[in-house]
Length: 212
Image (cartoon, rainbow, N blue to C red; front, side, top):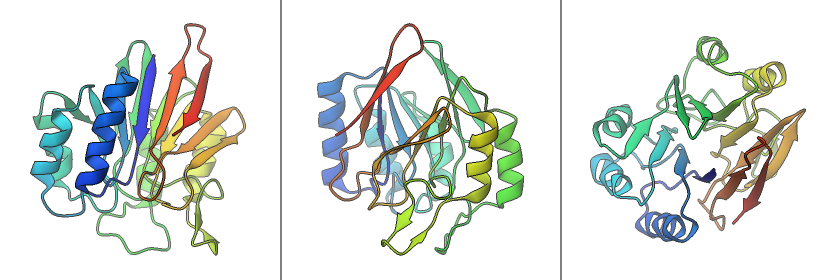
C-alpha cells in the first residue's frame, strides 16, 4: 500500500504539475492532500484538475481553502473530502479534519479547537492515518524559526490515541519526519522546495516514509 502525501499547493500551476508528475511516476494507491489545495480563488478549476490525477485523492481543506472546497471534493468521482470522516483503502483507515485549528496566524476558516478535537477524537485510534493541516504543537511547527505554531490539543490527542501516522502541512519551512511516542508525524508541505512524502505500508503493518 503506497501513499503519496502533499500539502500547501495553493492552486499554483507548477505545484499541480509537479504533483501530477510524481503521482504518475510513483503510482500510489492514494494521493493525500493535507490542506491548502487552493488559494481562495479558482477552487472549482483546481479541484477538477485533481479529479484527473492518476490516483484516487483524499483531501482536507487548509486555511486558504474556502468552504465550498469540501463540497467540490465530494462532487467529483476521483476526489473525496476527509473532513470528520473515516475512509478505508486497502485495509488502511484514513481520518481527517478540515481547516486550521487556531494558531498564531489569522485564518478565515480557523475551527473552534476544543469542539473539533473532541469530534476528531471519536474517530481516531491506533490504526488510523490522521490527516490534518496544522502540525501538533512542538512537532515540525517552527514558524519563521521563531515560535511553535502547531496545535496543543492536537498534540494531546496524538499522545492519547497514538494513530499510526499523522500527515500535515501548513508550516512551509518545516517539511520532514518526527515522532510522538509510537506515532510518526510527517509534514508533507510542497510550498517551498519539498515535493511531498511517500509512505509504503507492508502487509505486516510496518511502514517506511521517504521525503521527496
